[in-house]
Image (cartoon, rainbow, N blue to C red; front, side, top):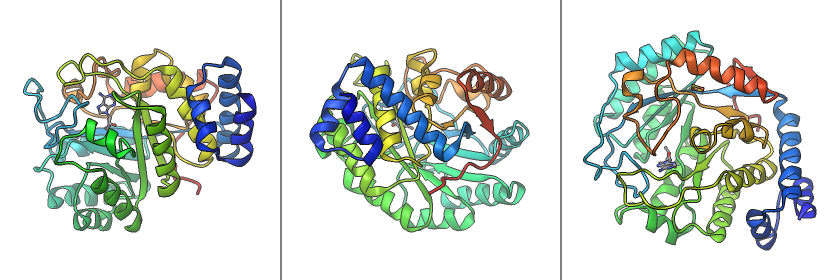
Length: 345
Ligand code: 5AD
Ligand code: FES
């Protein structure tokens, strides 16, 4: 198995059969080598730097009904909120003081967040923080909407493709959503000049090794600057409440594979990874990750952005998370970079 890791390290790619073997292996020597090679490759491009993204969860209203997600529209128990422009600006202000140079506005697909509203917020952020990157993660919108927000000053867009295997996509989403539309959005964002992020959940219900290989092949086609993956974590008010979650081992294997396939990509150690294991994010950093996205949302809404059960960092003030992360990043052998942290591609 270690020879497959070395081949991936040397060539940046593998055949489907080799990928299948590596994704499914429980060989400890392979896991260790994958971690070492992934770390070597991330250090070649990014040194010890870890970029921080200040995550502002702008709305928990969502018109979609994805079966895995706690803020799906059918979850009548969800306690919903949306932030005002003033609240978003105040999150950004405290974030800037804490050293964040990227703000990520993420939310459900909330029709109250019109293009006019979003462009107003984006222009104000752009003017007040010319040295910061503005990232959006607001789901599927029209080409025109993506264009207006880009023109207003947005730099990056995160839209996980969720599942590149069409059959799996259908099992995870309601009939009115389509993989084709999701992919179109991603290609449109790229065409508009956004730095684009795609990604998927690891260990989602019905996911097979072949579906994970389809995800990797789709990413090779899209060539995104950012790739977000994390374990699936069940939420008790969804149809997947009783399903198993994704495991730490499989998530780390995929992170290592992604780092070797995409040497320069921006790869976050996600909150979901930190949720399934106390040192999950640290292990992610040691397996090729170079980004963390701590929460800047007001503490009184944190628990309401409830995508999955037991989400970490929902009680801490932004400053506490910032300091906690600094300690964790340094203890794992890396350092916090106070900069925009653009992709070096
Ligand atoms: N477990 C893990 N990740 C989830 N997401 C949504 N629901 C869950 C869940 N139950 C992820 C999706 C989405 C991102 C914002 O959060 O991949 O794109
Ligand atoms: Fe949020 Fe540790 S990162 S409390």
